[in-house]
Amino acid sequence: MTSVQATLVPALAAIVGERHVLRAPDDVAPYLVDQRDRYRGRAVAVVRPGSTDEVARLVQACAAHAVPLVPQGGNTGMCGGATPDTRGNAVLLSLGRLAAVRAVDAENATMTVEAGVPLGRVQEAAAAHGLLFPLSLASEGTCTIGGNLSTNAGGTAVLRFGNARELCLGLEVVLADGRIWNGLRGLRKDNTGYDLKQLFIGAEGTLGIITAAVLKLFPAPRARVTALAGLRDVPCAIALLRLARGMLGDRLVGFELMSEVALTLSQRHHPGSADPLPGHRWYALLQADDTAADAPLATLMEATLAEAAARDHLADAVIAQSQEQAARLWALRENVSEAQRREGPNIKHDISLPVSAVPSFLAASEQALSGAFPGARLVVFGHLGDGNLHYNLATPPGVDAHAFMDHAPAVNRIVHDLVTSMGGSISAEHGIGQLKRDELPRYKPAVEIELMQRIKHALDPRDLLNPGKVLPAG
Image (tube, rainbow, N blue to C red; front, side):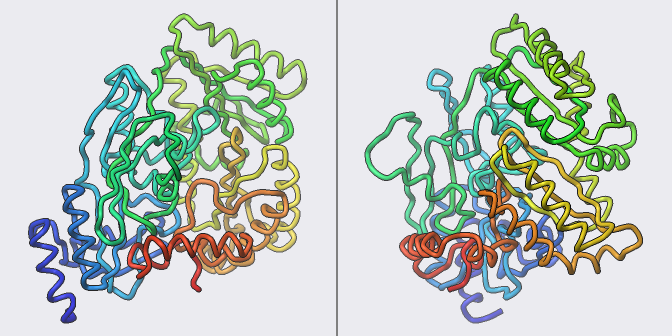
């Protein structure tokens, strides 16, 4: 332990209590590796504050010792944004004890929650008041609202409700000098200057530490219909999406795309999965909700699918007849990522495109990748309704998976160059973290990078908040 650490660690313990300053290797190990096991770091200690005031005092103590802080929520991130580097000079700030639902204002349709509340618990608290918090992710049982906001999380309902950014009205943030900014206002209209909360949403803890938020709530749906459609190609999926939006309107909450490869992978690694429409190259999963209990959703969905079939937009379709059947259909989509993990290492991308550009991108990228990496399998799925694809390359049969991962930079260059040339983004909902940090200068205009760096310097001039994340060096 260095002399700085010898002074700092007792100061941290004095703030949160000794049992909430973890230093034993077995205790800190789960916090120091990301969920994909791609990044492993070291830390002076893992500290678990129990209040915003404790967070502020911890930040002040670390600032006094010039020690960096890495904030972490549920540790479900995809890009290493919550994992410290290997130097071991940072304190990891685990926010899981900030777990209070402070208030639910049903009349204002808002909820104030602390950063460590799991997303699933936020959903349950809203439902207890007959309301809906619509953010929905596969990791919602463990991811936290602070992490969701720090990465501007997306998920399956963005088509109807938007990303996390659109679901937040106010924030409480601890700044780099330890001051607390209380912006917990539940207002839909507030034109009193810069909308400061937007700086911290999506910043991955590099500008300030989110400790609480005011979230938008919506009327809970009282009718829901889920359908799976088998499709000939992706242009058919886009035609079906356009038709469904026209016939279902705002009732259309989710529109997910899966390739046959992705669906088969999900089924293979989850025995007993549903298999209602075998033999199609592509699949679309649709969900429609309505707040009226007697809404004719099933009739509207049937009419939409029938019209799509008449226009040759789909080959076959099935509508879930119960909540259990709907859950089994959704499991096909939600289990794809876990199936990929079980299958072995693969080169992943979280990209977004204008919906109209998706077919051209898929055709061009498949041609380029199949030429450069013969036999590699494309596993494509995602949120077609908002143009977000999880576009992954699995190892060719007979090739060592770990050796194939060495091709990631070349694969990324092909995919990201194509995405950018078509007006898309190299990160749709997972953030930048460590994984994509050094690619930003190639894909963002220099003026954007400069503005981001100026904002960082203004709010965290000593680079103590999550250093090495999001912003490229320089």
